[in-house]
Image (tube, rainbow, N blue to C red; front, side, top):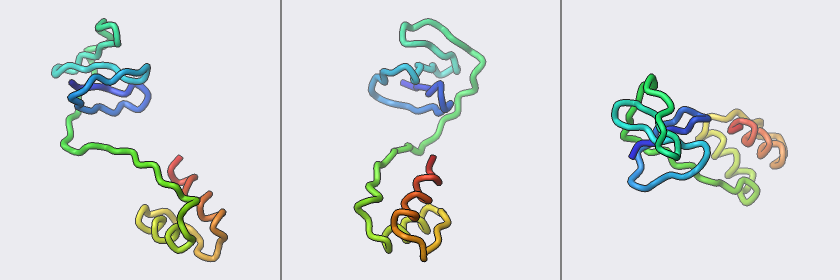
Amino acid sequence: MRYKNIKTGTIIDSPSNIIGDAWELVDDNGVLYNQKGEVISGDEEVITTDEEYVEEEIDLEAMTKAELIDFAKEQDVEVNEKDTKAVIIEDIAKAFE
């Protein structure tokens, strides 16, 4: 089954039912259905991808300052290495808002 997040526009394929106000069912022709099965729109372009987005929760507070700096570099987030751990955490969090 294919679902579209009406807040972000993200379309995903899932073998399971997805329930929630932000998700609507989309068929192979791009027709969007609400949770009651009523047609909402047929004008949407359906984009398929083989990649699966997985949101991972990371505990920045548990990381050391050095780990935070490495993490920021991996995520292409600019931080000042001379800043305190708290400021670095704040900079990383702002980058992901």
